[in-house]
Image 1: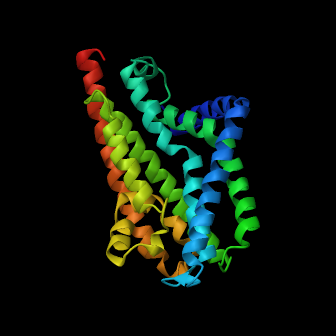
Image 2: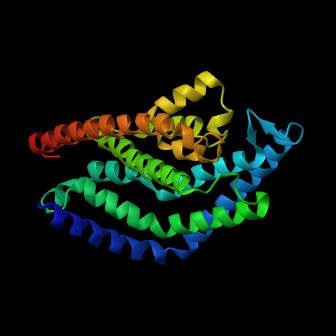
Image 3: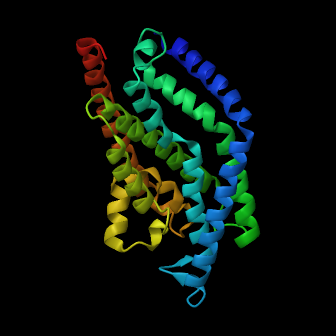
Length: 268
């Protein structure tokens, strides 16, 4: 299939899924309420932690809360749900019906999931920004063009990497009956090393270095945008992310190629 035709199919699937996501209004409300509750709890906990010192390792309370909110925004992107979309298609056999269609199966899954999540993702950003402005005020950043380019580049790279990683987990359904243990290990690693509970900048030095050079921390490297030396450290964050995008992308290609052989040989 030609690249332009594949791109057209991607956006067609995206638009259909987008309309479906907008229709789930009640679900959107409850998901956004969950965001407010989680960020409210984190605000109270970290406010107490920073009450005496004012800053920890040079990171202020405001920077810590803004960093934590980035995980919530990334979660709203929905890439982690591609694991379930992919594995379900393999387990129930619907993947076979997609293989005879011109759009690549993984492209279809990505377009469907991103379209389904898009409305929630935008609302998630709005709710997080409004809540954080109200709770702690403006983030302590320069707001320069270089800062914006750095955070947007790391965010785009992190979300592409997350699509690759969670798609790989879903494809393990070709070989194991229940990929959930793999998903659990990876997902919890991203939560711990990606700054879900504690900002990456507050982790011990050795753990922080491991986080930055691991694929789990590389997904969320953009969350370090609120540390004082973020712009100076851009390349040290971007290079590990780029390396993992290439490596996990190659792994995804291998898993897909070998998985398709199993369908052809075993009939699904």
